[in-house]
Image (cartoon, rainbow, N blue to C red; front, top):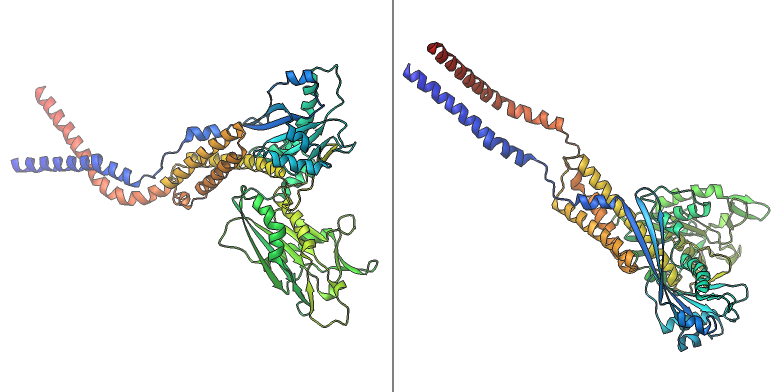
Length: 561
């Protein structure tokens, strides 16, 4: 009996020891080694980004030339003035426009520059004197009788960040406050032309807010421009469907250096550009043109242009090594049997450039060469393409694709041609404002969406690399918003680019998908066959020990009674 009791007691101790080891060591160890690793994320700071309040600060300098103010008004001229406008776009997004205007009178050298024969020469002379910072606007108020501007022109916007504004007729009865109040309205129009307008800001925030009702022109502009990206691939292709008849020669390297590269150099702060070219033989359009007897030429209608791109795109190839958007510019030389070939718009009129563009894809130009040789010429005919004509069209299309729409100035405004760079300084600033706001909107939306996803699905792995990218994106976003508030446009753009790069790397990290399709019911299906055979004997032993303890207690109670 004593040996049996000892054996039972040892069995009880063994069962309790096993249960203790499983409970104290096994279960915590299993829980620790099988739990999903989730690094710390700044959820509180990310939640603050869900409600975005931007402040765009513009540094404006108004310079009064001789005769635009009375001597008494010059003495009372304030040093600066701040004008603010608060506009709430939706419940979570608002914008404050902060116009910081500084007033002063023109220096002697500036007065000499304003005495130049033409406004273009005055703009160049003023630029040689002082160089304005990125995002700033300088407005020179000239006398109403100045010959720099024609009689019907109120404002002249040059190639730099300078505008010439004709003053209103000077009335001695006007106080300085009335003069500045009347001037503020005109200066605000200049700023909306050279920097940004509210409509531009709302369009840049389209990733966060629902677009309100806008005009067809504004909608077309927003759809045409390619989305902001850290880099772009630009490909120029020459399509020769009839190499037996045409031997085409194009100086693409020289043309890119003369026409495209100056524009890309000025756009370097916005993105990295990679340019290449190719010649495709026997590449034909996917649409058969129709012969028009009235003009003795083949024509492509506007309705058929949408069917041209897909067959041609299959021949272009793709750059698999890069994830950047690609802009394609195609020069198509029709074969001898379909020449000349003209493109017609929806009103059945010939397009002057004989080209068309597809939003966010690129453009195609048809280049007719039938007039360059006769029917008895020896084939193939050597043809040198006029690159100035071709690049003029492609440069205009490239500007549209990058968001450099033709600005529609108010009545009485004259905008100087951007010249050889293809881009005025104020046009670059206008694009910088738009891209900075767009980058901030896109990055904040990406980060908040990622945070919501990680919060809702608890078994997604958050490794240290993702946490580092998220923290970097949040920090860069905060810095970009702060730089916008102080008016440092160049730094704001740089931080916004860093934010969008870090946010997209975190959002599209492949490690986020490792346990995305491993729900809890599958965990139970795997663990039950492993743990159930081990747990049943332990549980039964514990139940038996509890039952025996109760029985002993009952026996002792019975003996006492």
